[in-house]
Image (cartoon, rainbow over all chains, first blue to last red; front, side, top):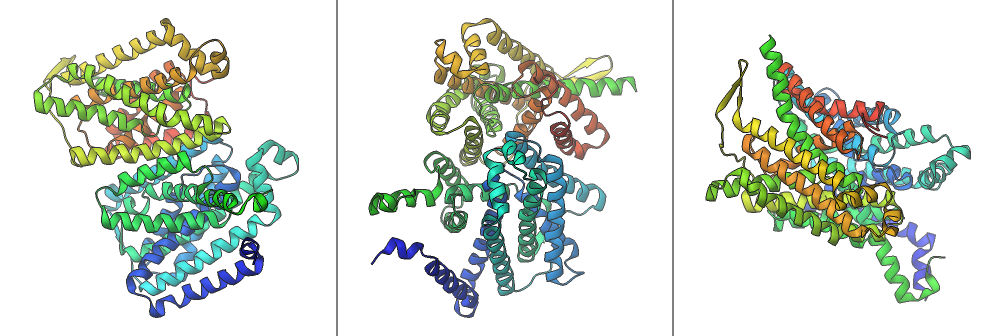
Length: 316
Length: 289
């Protein structure tokens, strides 16, 4: 029996994904309430991480704006919560987030490297402080109440977004757009010379990734019942996706997924067991992951696997 | 009216002195060691807390604390570079990858330092009163501690500039900033110089923290705000330019004090707007190459 060949065969992967999807869809019928809530959180981080990797993985532009796009979705939900039904709100949240990304992308994607990183991080802080100031001085109330829906509804909505974002990322990766994005990451000038419309492609992908982040924000807001700018635009939501993607490994599509799943579970465990040391341990893991896991968990397992199974199955 | 304008100007200069001091440190760390130190504010916080702890426990004058907090933070920075960034530098395939990775590692350091501080000193706001009597200038009154802070900030900044311009080590640092590989071939011990630079940047932050704690309230989570200010200042002055950072610091202090006068809640927003406009219009800054 040729195990490595079997595992990497397309039919096996598809079958595995199908079973996983069936299990996840039927889960609310028999699973405990806690695991549904935990899984929703995990899904949220997977959505954020995968959509972050959609743009930043191949192009190498490290965006620290996820919190801004997520927050835009959260605010759409908070402002329109009592006006429209939830599906409309999710679409509005996703679209407003994508529009923000179009605007920001058009302005900033000519900035390279560290400048782009700093600009995107500045955007989150700017939005946070501006809305905070707006609520304190203009409207006079900080924070808003969001209409809630059941845990199971939130779960299914998040699962739908998750499936959509993974499908989109897969399709982009295996199309000529994915190839073009990859070439931008390797050498932008060369990509432009071979006929890639560099600017348009970058902006569109940036907006697509923001679309899903906004959708996730709009859904998550209904679970929190009360939000204020500090919750909606929490800068930690900008760092976690980056970290989870690095932790999992950005080479393969499932790298960020695995990174997000393991990291969120770990986070949940740390928060409940060591509430006071959680951020400290988090920081240590972050430094260690950057130092010793250059290709993430997936890269590490591949390396170990190659060593165990011999060089026969090593990547060419 | 004249007094008000004068008031705003002086208040801006007083704040700008500290901004300049902390930005100079960050500028050195990024300009030479190529580490965009997001944890810069944490070194400021450590300096401030050491001063606060020494003053409230043993009544040691904050001005004497400079000789304790500065070297201590220098050692932390030096060791950190040796243990962490030196390794990243050798394992990274390109300078761009190193910049990205080292910045993310700095976020990790930020979380570690911030939470250690919360565990040791607690999360609440702290402060002490030192030389808080007013001094009058043509009708406007200013607290003595802020004037002393400005004096010290200018003195530290000038000493730092002279160190870079006149000493042998300063020359090695400037050489490493221009071309690390060539400097290495000329006999400069690059890894030691870079670690020294990072430590020196931390030292400036620590001194800034000590001075800050004399006239402002401090908190374990205060770091990031000052990091952002320092970042804005070095972009304003041109990344890697030491005189640029100094001018930028005073400029931002002035802007801050004008905006605070017009609309108090908006000063942070104004900083970010300036920062983002500047990145778009002239990313190289006022004195950048």
